[in-house]
Amino acid sequence: MKISVITSTFNSAKTVRDTFESILCQTHTDIECIVVDGASRDGTVDIIREYEPRFNGRMRWISEPDKGIYDAMNKGIKMASGEIIGFLNSDDVFANQNILRRIDTEIQNVDCIYGNLDFVEISSTSRIVRTWRGSPYTKGAFKRGWHPAHPTFYARKECYEKLGGYNTSLSVSADFELMLRFLEKNNISNKFIPEVLVHMRMGGESTGSLKNILIGNKNILKAFEINEITPQRFYTFRRLIPKLINRIKHH
Image (tube, rainbow, N blue to C red; front, side, top):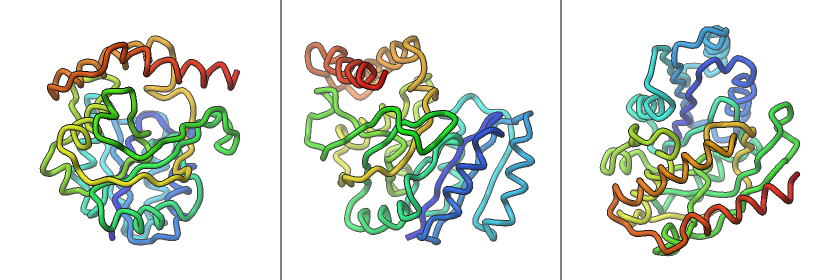
């Protein structure tokens, strides 16, 4: 199946080459690279133009002002022509060259897949700082503090067409809200891949400061409210404690 990999960029010149190389080396070749640039001024657009010929017609891109990362991601969804859609941020890379092949195999009989994630150093995508080990979804899991690692989440385009894209009113955690809406509220079929799919550089929108984590948790509670789902008591603590333990382990 054709897989659309969407990358949103904004002043990403320092890292986006790694992202493009990671896509180009994939052994699954029925792909398209969708790049949504937010009017970068640091040479990112020049790098996009540099790589475009190497994709042999499989890259489509725009560069224009946007209203943030989730607005850019929604633009990418509209541009995508693949049956499967996933996101690879401009500072992230696939864990190895066979990731999209594995995704193509595993998603054949389900609506979405997700897997494990490694957080890596900003300066080295091979140096692991923290890990995210997922587990198969069970009904009600979101209420107990579970959710997939969004960079590993790949879903059929028809799910976005039927259920909608990212809620741009949520500044940090619209990815959580979308997965909550898809899995918990609408019960799309899914499969967990027990393999590291993505290396994610530390310091992104949701991996950075404590302030962002607190804003994210506020947005997540709002996501439950939007979808008329009630989380379990002490939800925030259930969610934060594993994150804090993980941070202590890796410091």
